[in-house]
Image (cartoon, rainbow, N blue to C red; front, side, top):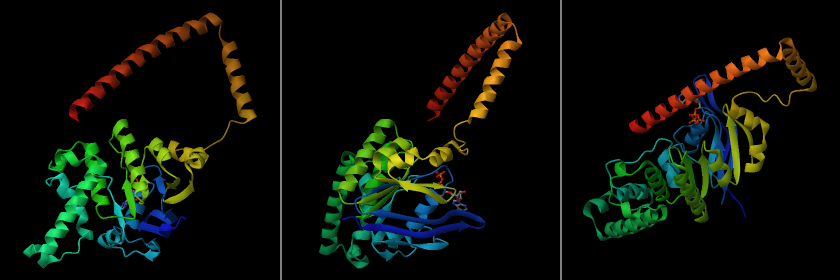
Length: 315
Ligand SMILES: Nc1ncnc2c1ncn2[C@@H]1O[C@H](COP(=O)(O)OP(=O)(O)OP(=O)(O)O)[C@@H](O)[C@H]1O
């Protein structure tokens, strides 16, 4: 049976005069992977921040497993929601293992004195934490790099480490903010498998992503935010086929098929252009234009090529 894990009701977030999120209702059920998409500036990250207590919504409530969440990030984590960030936030000078151990701290009960005196209770808790952290590193494929400094990991592995750290807090819901940003197609596929495996562990997942193929392959349900409002929510098939979603991504209003009158107008104009000049003149002009296009095209390709290689060197 599916039960709601997360329920956001009528969430609005204003920054001064700007309404970044407007009256959004949103639910994630147990066992679900839900996607949140929308063009740049649509309000996705702001909405995530409202869910995780980083922002206090101007209006509305967020409940986890039926209880309204306090707007404090550490209390939200304690309640059972973990997240990763669009811009990776690891402890760069700590090892991979230490980063995951930091994520465990909300689940360890040993107090300050126990930690300072390093009593038997503390040592046992420490051992258990380390075992769990290693299991998680195994799970994301980073166990062999446990002693590496986080900053020395390639980008894709840093994103995986963030996921391992989030999982260390034993969440019931994991929020991923652009988990495949900067990844190559192979890394993206591995991340997709990782998210399915996380769901199989019984953790519901909410993911923001710009990579549509990733989202539509992965998610049971997808919601689309446009200018702070929820435009549509449904299965990947339904959302992909929605003309308003396509229009939102192309950045222009959907105008539909040209009507018969418009099509006839275009035909008439083309016919008039064809009869206005002798065939030879048209052919000669077309030939010249053709060669100009080719030269310009070649120049563009070369310019693009050199831009690419410069970019490659600087990265
Ligand atoms: N702290 C803030 N103060 C003022 N305005 C903000 C703040 N955070 C976000 N905004 C504005 O709110 C709107 C939504 O931004 P948000 O970052 O949530 O969008 P997004 O959908 O996550 O975009 P992207 O896909 O580019 O990350 C934007 O107009 C943004 O400039």
